[in-house]
Amino acid sequence: MDCLEIEVKFFLQDLQPVKKHLTRLGAENSGRFFETNIRFEDRQNSLIKKNALLRLRKDNRVSLTYKSSPDDSDENFKVYNELEVEVSDFKTMESILNSLGFYTAQVYEKWRETLVLENTHFCLDTMPFGNFLEIEGSRDNIKKMARQLRLDWNERILFNYLKMFETIKAREKFSFSDVTFENFRQITVDFYRYLPVFTQKGNS
Figure (cartoon, rainbow, N blue to C red):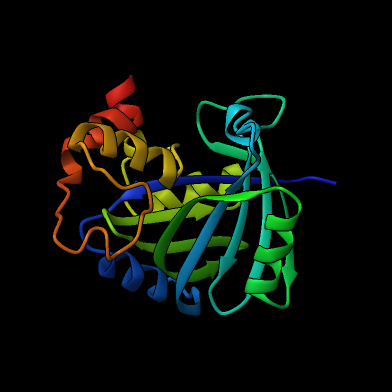
């Protein structure tokens, strides 16, 4: 049975004030880990065509995730059906997927620190192209916590990181497709330029 993943993102120049605020509110810190993610595709590229994601992730554990669009859209939140299972070995799972006909379409990396408060997950994400807060939970809790953190609801982002990167890649004319820190080692992205493209304020 699919589980709904409900979330929004906010671009933040500095993650520390939000972390301190959440800590004062009593949030429990689950740790900060480096992530390596592989997005898989089949030879027909059918997953991306139907807005689905098959992802293998390694951080402090290894997980395989399948995401797909729900039947009903929601203009206020990013919502996906999500199926996830923990696996024991990253390389072996990668080999299994390759043997089944899937190939590595894209690699992406991030640093993620997760805090939990009132059944809501706050992911402090450092991507190669910027810092973001991802709030995941129920719709009511997400809106409540965004208010408590004094975030502008109209500046929420409903795009995933890979879709954001595709827009940045096209405008900046990047020649690479993997969202790794090495690829961005000599590149600085002024993400403020892209806020009108990605936020609800820019699309209102």
